[in-house]
Amino acid sequence: MRANVLRVLIGAGGVALMGVGASSLLDVPDLTDVLIWLGGAVVLHDALIAPLVLLVGLVLVCGSVRGPVRGALLVAGALTAVALPVLLRPGPRANSSVLPLDYSRNWLLLLAAVATVTALFLAVRRLGRGRRRPPS
Image 1 (tube, rainbow, N blue to C red):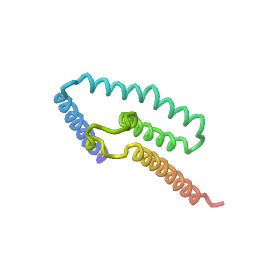
Image 2: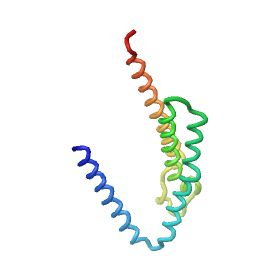
Image 3: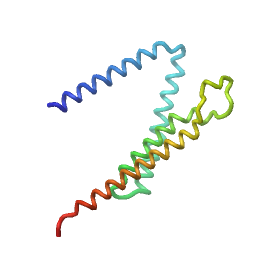
Image 4: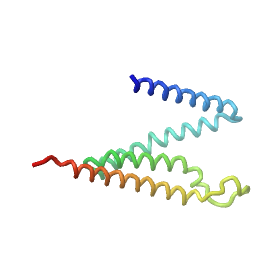
């Protein structure tokens, strides 16, 4: 019963946030640019990121680590898709306060963090399995 109430509350929160996002689209002066960007994100994910993740997970990874590795690859792909516009336009800007951070370095740090968290998860899971051996 509590799980159903929690699901309804989370779903209502998600619908409310989608409403906020949809209402903010009404303030955009050129909606076609936003729709092109959103369509490009969908195509990038469905045509490139998801097939690559599934292929790498199928070919390179075997056994019980396949799921966590696929999850890490999906997160890395999503981070790359979000960072791609900034990564593809390096160089000086007319207004130095627009993008003041080192996005290439931060993107690499995030990818390293995803790999580290995945490795730690797999190590903890492997240690947990080693301790639960049935008595002989």
